[in-house]
Image (cartoon, rainbow, N blue to C red; front, side, top):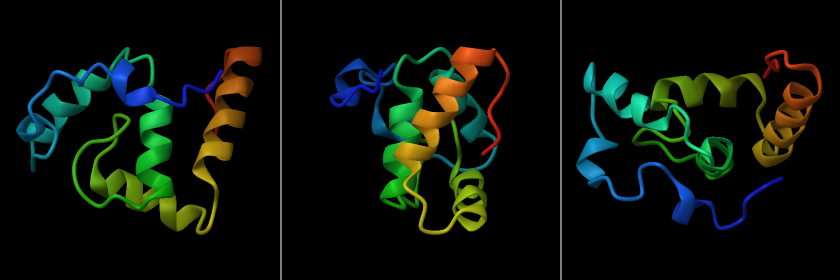
Length: 97
């Protein structure tokens, strides 16, 4: 089930923005905050669909998101990620993006 008002349920909602908009090795610390977040998929779709260039969103860095955008230019990432989540739920296997 897709959560429309995802930001209020995010694991990082109480975090200072400085914790999520970092460079280098600090990005790994920011990504750890996303582990287990109940709305990680929605957050990532937001960043990809709006081509947000900075910060860690949905457990991915700017570089990681750019790589996905190059693979599927013009994709509706909400749709892609909804289908991937449904497939993972159904099969238990990781989805290919």
